[in-house]
Length: 356
Image 1 (cartoon, rainbow, N blue to C red):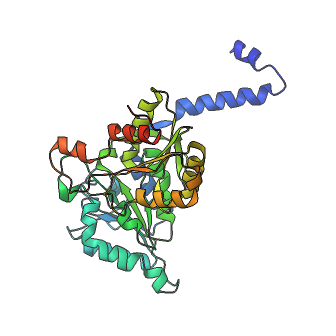
Image 2: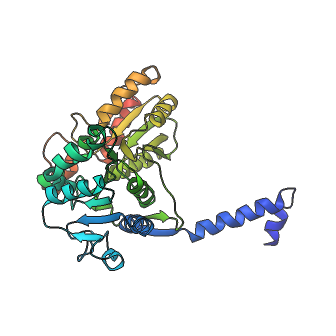
Image 3: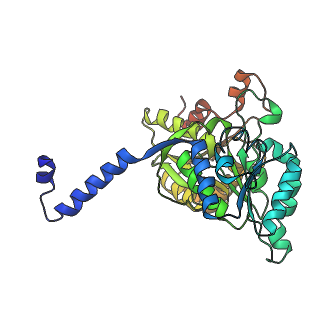
């Protein structure tokens, strides 16, 4: 301690010493919790704050959630606010839209967004359009949440990424967090939003751990986050595939290439400004996304960059997407179909004109 006193023994000693102790306290005091726990905290805190909020879906109550996201919530909030449903997505999605149109604030959980296709008429033709068709008389403050995209050997019907599908529809907001901190802050914001929000997770992320403060915080929808600063190339991604982008950036750093990694966090709205400013700095762009290539988010961003920042590009934009085929069952074929580190590194070297 005496060394610290000597080190900070100048005009602003007391302030700087206090800040040092405070920052050290934050480092050692920050909790580390799982992704599923961050989601649970977000829902529970909002339900304590507002008794109009309720959770509805398959196995969310008695079973504590298919992925244990809602563990303990039935005991705290009771069966009128944590509601198990039949296997009838169209039905309980419709109940949620009706409830939201009449002053409640539902959270509708799909066991997987693959099952949301059964309910897509209620999402697209009712929830997304109600405000516009009523001339602004009816808001639909509803959150549709659950896992999206691949989750191992689940084959074609349970391994589809629909972020770009829902992002195509005006009236919806689409959020895809990549870590526990963002998941909690974005879900709280989504629940408070007066518009319908599609909140998409991943089965493969529920056990991920990260630092999440105990105090309340919110993250605005539509604000990207620069996960790693860089100067040589911009990598844009979101959701669990951000792990691929970060792993590729780490491998490239060992080879002397400094990549900037941007996590979109939401794909409607998209934070184009952050991406454009990064491209102006790095002059190169690679987008990594778990979706089929046609009409993907990566294609949309490519168009926007070539329209708004074309003169800053030193190479064509490259998009790494899922293979244009239903996802196979075999793990070797899954690895070949999905975006991976090797494909991402190869693309980055291509935009940097590195041949090997």
